[in-house]
Figure 1 (cartoon, one colour):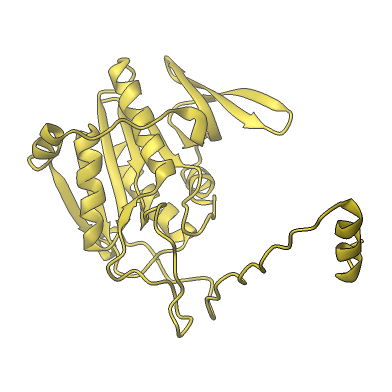
Figure 2: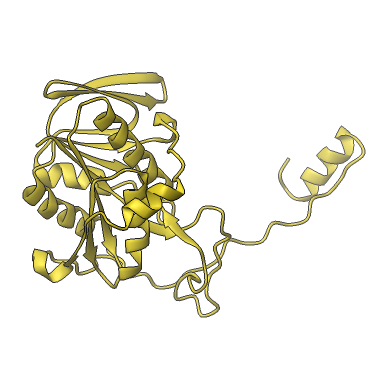
Length: 249
C-alpha cells in the first residue's frame, strides 16, 4: 500500500500570547488553547492532496505526546487522514528522541513518504526531519514549497536564498514542508463527526523500545525584555541627536 506518514505536534496555538511561569520553570499551559503545529497542518494538507491525485492510498497521522494530543489527531482525522497513531509520552521529547520514535513507526508502517513540518513553533528546532532521514538512511527534501511525485521519485521545489531549487529524491523519503506549499483546508462539522469513528491507536513509548532520555538540560526560562516606549522626533537632526545620545550614531 502506498502510505504517507504525517507528523502532528501539539503546541500552544499561534494566536495565544506565550507567558513564562513566575518561577521560570517553563511556559504557562493551564487553560491555554492548544493546536496542531501550523507547519504540520501544511504537511497533512499536502498528504491529502497527494492521495486525492492518486499518488497515495492511505494517510496516517502520528503524534508523540501526552494523552491530550488525541484532540489534535482527531482534528487530523477530520481533515481527512485515514487513521492516527499516538505514541504516548508524558514528558516533552527532544528532536533526537522524536526522530527515533518516527523511525520505529516507519519500520512498522513502511510508508512511501514521511511528511513533517519543517519546524515547530514552540521550539523552532528544525531538526526532526533531518534526523529521521539520517536514522532511516533515506533521502530527504527540506523546506518544500512544491511536491510532485512521479513513479518512485519525488520532485521537490525548495525556496533558498538565491531563488528556487528543485531536487529529485528516490522514494521512500522524508520531506519537510514550508509555509508556501499550500493552505490547509477548513474542517467541517460533518467531518468532525465522521472522525470519531476513524481508528486512533495509542502506543506507549516504552513499547517501542526508544531511548528518550534528554540530552539537554534546560536551566531556566526567561521572557524577552520589554520594549522601551518609542520617541517622536520633529526632524532628522533631532533623530540624529537622539541616536548619538544613546551611542548608536
